[in-house]
Length: 266
Image 1: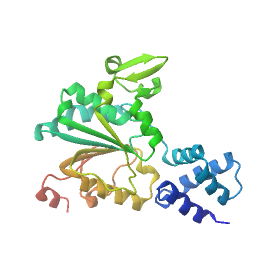
Image 2: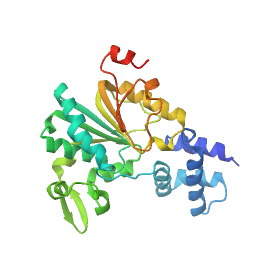
Image 3: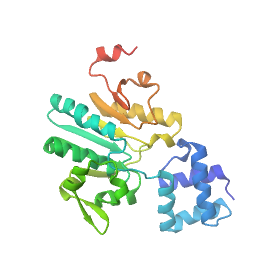
Image 4: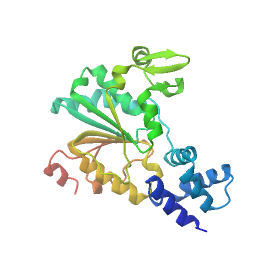
């Protein structure tokens, strides 16, 4: 019989996730809670279940990737994005590329799409939303939400862009079409580049320190000079200077616009 470490290795290969790059305490708790609920008493049975039961395989992936998101989460960050960051970038560039990494149910990139539409610059901005979980990506593409998903959304935007049907809020097709949703594994897949803004919030809290550092370095490379990285409020980049970033404000970090700007960090 395989032991736990071997199970993590084989299960990770099966789902395309290196489980050792996640914090062990959180990962171990999730795995063993599933094992208990499925009434499995050894790791061989667990692995065989993942290989043969599609529903349980999807449940396993969902358990590992924790999908929690809502529109305008931490509203003050989105207001800064709306009134300062995007106008600044738009003043300097004809078109913008924006990436919501680990986008979950789509609430985050759709929040950006709402702002972009309000600014009247939809034709100048391309928005990508990526996640490892195909199930949650399909949900994002449908654009159907509960009241709690919209609790931080300005009421005027809810009235303008959502239709309430059977106690669910359906996002207008015009906004849904502004976001390109793609499957992407942040710890494994190659990154796109030339982004003006990357948003990655409440994702890396589950990663090891080494995995986080490697991820932020990749984000840095994927940004244009002067591009911004927006992170979650509970995951500040304590070593942002070593990573090459400049701290602009709470949760916002910028890639220096020039080599001279970068040298000022040292």
